Length: 256
Image: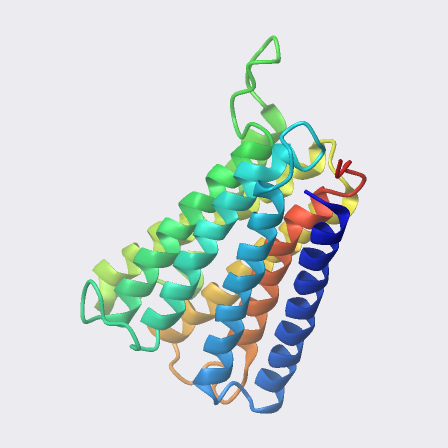
């Protein structure tokens, strides 16, 4: 791929980031009251992810970019599912059920499976065959602590006996969320650029906070954060950071 083509894609990525951030500001100024603004932000995040994925796919395998091909592809699939989830949560898309929360949990849950595969693509999660003992102890400890945290948080802030089945469905999704965040944090132990590590940790943290706020609002207090753009802003910024992690991980890569 020529340098000029690379530059074109990089400029397009920069333009998309600027527009996404502008839409996030509009979300804040309108208190998140305009659904079309939020959905436009999500759609542009898909475009940003697609451009990043294309950038990685069309560069030669033997360059520094090549090893990030599958990671960028998995992030792209996850972002598509995130966008579909964004359509499902407000009821724009009523599939496969007529209950928006169930649909949202389904799409975002599958999306997080792709995120977990992407994180595993960068470095092993639990088992490292290159190590003599095989187990990545630090990762296991971080994950176990995270599971304990989500169970406590669920019991204190989400669980509603009147909606027991839905509550435990939310717990299952919460375990996926916290697992992705936990394994994002474990990348701190690996040899990656500092901004890559910060992007995925902060990105998944914001994603988690956003979805926790939705769960609390759904099961405990329907007026929680009403009239604010908190959920949309934390989610949008979280996804932007996660989707930017490919480019930040490419720091110093040879483009050929």
